[in-house]
Length: 216
Image (tube, rainbow, N blue to C red; front, top):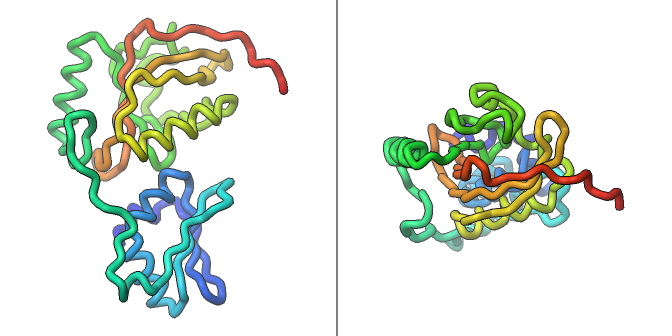
């Protein structure tokens, strides 16, 4: 298995299982798609199964070694269509980014592994997000979802299922701590410079500040 897929994972072995704790729900999902490789690793370790979990999960993926004998595929390849970028190469994605900038739209590319920002264009201005565009590269978005985890979890679940989410409404903290609501079109890309990512495309003015949420 490519070491990329185990990057950031915690590995351990018990009496009957090879255990992988992925850094996020999406990372666990991606590992599940490599079920045969995980089962083969468990078999080499003379264990009965591989178990993939992630922080906070209560139903980990259990992958028995027996799937190697049954030639069982945990997932099937997803069909191509015009709404998302499964199988897209770097040049196609670059053309998409340029096209959206020419249309006056913000483009943000975020790693699905760890929620680190990999790219923004110059239209993500401080009045919307509190930082200059270049300051977002390398920024970890995960902390900004701290008061809207339901919105974040729904985003990840829908991207895994649908690969494209038009006009997704969500709430997020800004780096200055203020709470805001945004609308973004999201696209899932399996491989952008060897990293699975989500591409967010937004209208410059499609956001608003919100009052502080009422404590429950």
